[in-house]
Figure 1 (cartoon, rainbow, N blue to C red):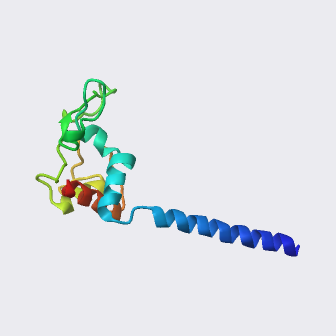
Figure 2 (tube, rainbow, N blue to C red):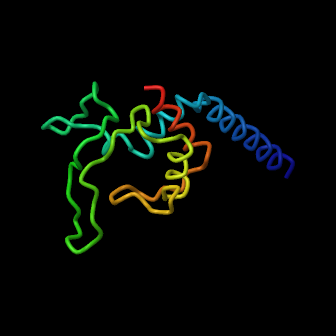
Amino acid sequence: MKSLVLTIALLSVGAFAVQAEVIATAPTDAVARGEYLAVSVAQCIQCHSPHDRDGNLLRDQLFTGQAMPFTSPYPDGPRWAPRAPAIKRLPGWSTEEFVNILTTGKRLNGRRPESPMPQFRMSTQDAEAIAAYLKSL
């Protein structure tokens, strides 16, 4: 019985150490975290950046906006935006407005962006990190 308790205790300590290591390696800088979220998690880069004919991102034009690369699969559904706007440096946006869209899914005036923009419900910290990253470009 004592060996079982000792084994469980050692496994718990080991699991805590692994969790602490993962937390320690996660980006803590707001700009780095924002880049990770905008590129790899929320995928903002896919709609808000132009692509070449083969579908590759045009790396020198990231987040500069583009015509929507696809049409709505719902012919009788809601209207889709014809363009994804430029968000590099957040032109025409205050940080407050941008963070509000990412945390509530709506503009400050209560309207939601046109589809296919997801109605995100990000944490304020994550939304502010994305704003910091986009402003840094």
